[in-house]
Amino acid sequence: MAVLIAGAWPYANGDLHLGHLSSLIPGDCLARYFRQKGEKVLYVSGSDCNGTPITIRAKQEGVSAKTIADRYHEAFQRCFDQLGFTYDCYTRTDTPLHHEVVQDIFSTLYDNGYIYHKKTKQMYCSHCAQFLPDRYVEGACPHCGAHARGDQCDACSTILDPVDLLDATCKLCGHKPELREVEHLYFALSTFQPQLEQLYARAKKNYDWRENALNLTRRYLDEGLQDRAVTRDLPIGVTVPIKGFEDKKVYVWIEAVSGYYSASVRWAKEHHQDISEFWNEQTVSYYVQGKDNVPFHTIIWPAILLGIGKKALPTHLVSNEYVTLERKKLSTSRNWAVWAPDILEHYDPDSIRYFLLINAPETHDADFSWKAFIESHNGELLGAYGNFVNRTLKFIEKLPDFKVDVRPVDAHVEQETQALYTQIGQLIESAHLKAALGELFTWIRSLNKYFDEQKPWQTITTDPAAAYKTLKTCLFSIANLAQLMAPFLPYSSRKLEKALHLNGLKWEAIHCSGKLPEHLEPLFERIDPVQIQVERERLAQQTV
Image 1 (cartoon, rainbow, N blue to C red):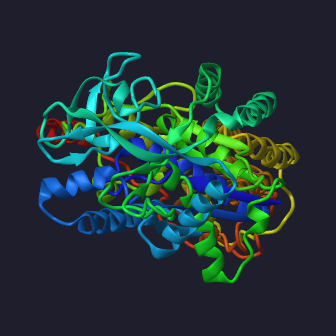
Image 2 (tube, helix red, strand yellow):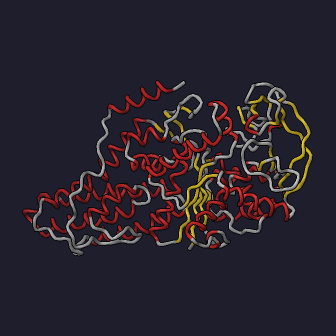
Image 3 (cartoon, rainbow, N blue to C red):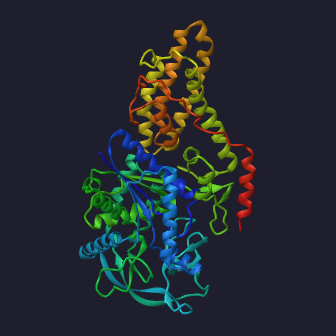
């Protein structure tokens, strides 16, 4: 089976924060899991370096857009590396290859009759003497009244056109823009309504999309799909490959989603591979993103694929809700955020992954608080998982005649462990990662209870055979936990893999090798609860 995992592309105009990480971590868990199963996996993403947010940031700092894009693309790569993300290709949208692929997609849509000419009116700022890209226009959303950009309202997830905004202003100078006639190219999105209705029906029947993706998509379909402009007067981006429009750029909403395909092409060229098995109707694909990106993946990208004759439509939508911070909405403008580089500098990446997965906003918004983060680390990772591993291995270290062999192992524990692979695998494949991790920690707590009930510290003198069976059962459980936890907590699993002399991590029940475990330092270090207040004060001090 070929599995394509496509992670959303963050704008390279500022550091990543916990909201980004929460929505993207599931992609790495899926990639790791399917690789452990032995499936063919292609995991791609990249930095969006062509969007208007980059040019806005560049103007604010008085530097080139490339300077901004380079800075944050490199920062993103560092963060993803530290978190253990296993992208097969992490690229960027300002590469010549991406431009070439996007232009080819655009030309194919044009040649197939799905892109047409249309005279329309566009916002023009006479003060700045330029037509305004959609994100240069801000105002009130006509649907919910919230402050919105000219392309989308983040509050209600409505896709907008700048002319829809109420009390519109130019983001650059604050003046009120005017409407001027201009010719653009439009994508015949409405043409694909019947096929997208079928795609929606299939996803709903198979429970392959998150509820928010189903609900938002149903709303757009019920409203009736509208044709959308695919060209814009932008300073950076992919040049339109159509005669007479060479001075315009391909609109970012059609260009950025095409990055999934261009990243696949880059991977194929670099590794001399054929990408066709990852882009056909048999491909299982997971698109991993936040709620605000849903329509681009359930409406626009499928329509583009249909328009160019590719049948690899999204099969799974892993779309998280939002993350709040200390019960307040994240605000990058006010600096009310926990930035990825900062938290990675001070805390174990497995701790970050664990908290954002076990508290994932899979069905509703979830809150990050420093108290909950530190208490979950100390209580679950250290107190439950780390404690079980440590107490078992420390006990074995004290027994000079302990031998690692397959039998005897408690039959019930062995049976339950084997069943876990099926149960956890099904949860992961249906993108219920929070439930999968929760089940594993329920199992860990039961193993701690098993250790307590068997009392090997007593039976080692009264019934050594029983004590050895208990310890071998616990060692067997730890070896399998290393594998079962690997998609979620790769760093601690790697430590266990090395200490237990495991021959790689697979997705099937295993017994330990005949070698004694190596000495292993504690999997997790305790975090002083004092840090709760330290972090709260730091957050308060940084907020504007």
